[in-house]
Image: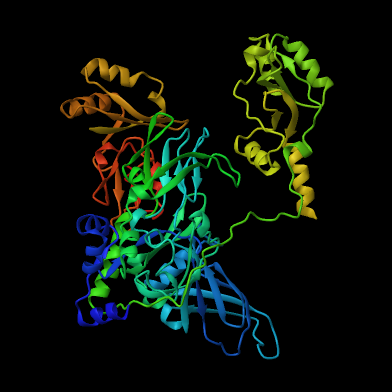
Length: 497
Length: 128
């Protein structure tokens, strides 16, 4: 390592990007590559929601112990000493919502723009001030230190959508019926896949962070190397960063996020490192998962490698589906090149890790101690169903005699085939045109299942503007009904507690 | 070439497109149509040779016709070339050249899907 830094100093260092390395190794062999290459530079540029910045505002007069603070109406956490704040990238603003958030404040600061600080204080004898407002530029902060709890995922699943409606997610717009695949990640340019065992990457590794020189300060949150999902926690000086490699973004109906440009230099000290840094897009495999299933465990549609994702199309169930990225390969390449240029020009020296990242991590599901209601807990199990042959009068009598405005219509095998409401019946009577249920029932019925969380059923009711969902079992037999009245009664009770 | 037809409420129920096809013998492809209580917007694609003839035929029937030369604009300072616009576009307006996203604006039918899908808010429809 010190030899490499010596070569950086005298300008003789040889640097290639992680995209150039595989061909070099193919041509020269790993031993030849070790002789010819000192450093492989990696790079990634993608939305990294788990990012933020510590800001120290300096002390006011009279002094304030900030408890709550807003920068351009974006709340920053003020519960750290008196004038230290943490501004998170995904916090939306209180006036502009999703279109402006913590990430946009960071971008405004980097662009040299003024931001409005509004703060409330906790009054003490040593900090008597109640509140304050001031206007600050980046240079006015004593420190503006980016600390990102989880960046640069080793691997991230691609997203698709099996449902009948367009979804807006943090993985972008997902068209219905597997209309597209959206992915993130820089493939073979990505840092961790080039050193998956942390032989070089570790605590103290100097990195390129949004145009500045930063450091890896540890493994990131949800770091799970034993399953191929390692992450990095990184730190850098916002004052040194450039807008080319730090960009605020908005994901429709999700909110703000931050695009972070991150590059790690990997010294090629031995043949093993030459082999590792020769990884190609096709060697990096991820899964396409179905975001149409709104649960933590989303089903896998298929496995796919980055070469296939980059090709623009993948096959799903025999259909050619268009793929596109949310992360930018274009800027990822710029990161790897910019890092290489600063090494070659003698501005960037490699640092040895003081400790490798842990080989084992943890990303367990949340322990949920408060009850969370399932459809089966609140549904009415007594549902009157009808067959499609009955006439309007009979249906009307059943609605009057029952407790629901809805009649699920079932086939001879008792399977759900449609739904009739009091409104459908009134409409049919008024027009005088139809006399049988089968003519007026809705055939496209939205359904719920017993083990579905009530929150999801409530979202379905709300989204489709309907007032009841029949609950069916796996054979499509109606076993209950959940109505919007039941749901709203439950939630209003819970909110008022 | 693409033409945007602005159809006023008074004539929206007349078979204008069919009439123009019969008159001009042009092959007209309706790429997008949105009609509500107040007005209608129809985007059609026609052979460039018949474009003027078709345009005049519509105008004679009281339709306001705008040639969509540059239906969508990409702000090059904002674009980070991620490609989020590529897979969601129904007409294939965007594609990669190398690692950069380029727009073939002539294909755009102004559906607007890309405008909200762009995380950098770099895309805007040119509405006339």
